[in-house]
Length: 383
Image (cartoon, rainbow, N blue to C red; front, side, top):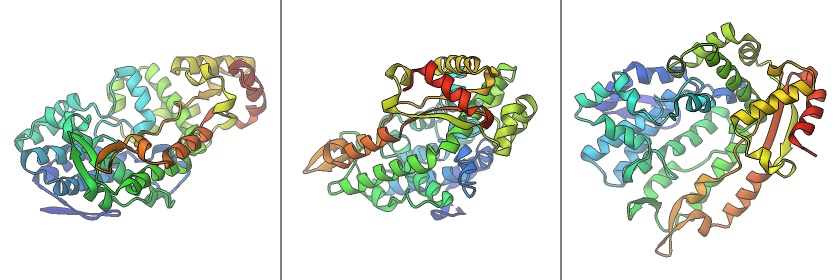
């Protein structure tokens, strides 16, 4: 059995299936997709990739299956799904996911077709594994799919620890060993055993803190908005979406530098737009918070026209209204399975904090901040 040295989990042993999957071009491509996309423009040491994250998820899935006494064919399919859960990502990972979804209707965890379009299905079948079962597990389907994609999935357990390790921030600290040992199945649902409300709270708190300081840092959001708009223009210019979604990070930067230099070149050089507006939830009309992408683009064009600027000089960035997925984690309390939001007073406080941190952004070149701010306040109805 091969083993790979990992900066987070130490040695990760690879079984025969994993060893063969790791050597495929589809998995090796993940070496060239950074885990934190534009966050690395804020935290320079966050240069880790989706390849090492996938190895970490595979490792934690193996451990979870051992503690849950799941073995044989069922376990083999889960391990394969854990290793392959990110192969559907496009360049820059989640940063381009919305662009791809709007063009194809597919998310990164919809990998059924991809398995058959690449050598992955053949590798799985050579080990008597069903590619369709693996794809369903990646999508979170069924009892065991919850381990790969769900409120208590091993994906989240790895990325919180790994992202904190590589950014150098102390906020993603959780105890994966404790979480894995506390996993149970109750009526087909993955839950945490009795006495683990604080364990569930630690996962919730870690995600909330990482969200504010890492994942939604304002510099990353500005760069992400610029990258997304550049990618839309690249695709509008004739690049096929199927080619686009199989690019690696460096492929995308090269294409953007050539085809959309005004935005792509700025992202590459970290010559980013500035915030003309950074408005909290209480200052934004509810209708504005529910704008879709087409509405955002229309608002950006209207703001640019009012400020007498080129239509591509303004970006409107309206994040989804705040949610707290981890609050739905199930934990046993006094013999009864409850959602964490029912068992913990912390959930309410974190929900309020998340609402308080929500911001609508309008971005433009530094020289145009004042006229864009004035135009945006009028167009969006801001106080």
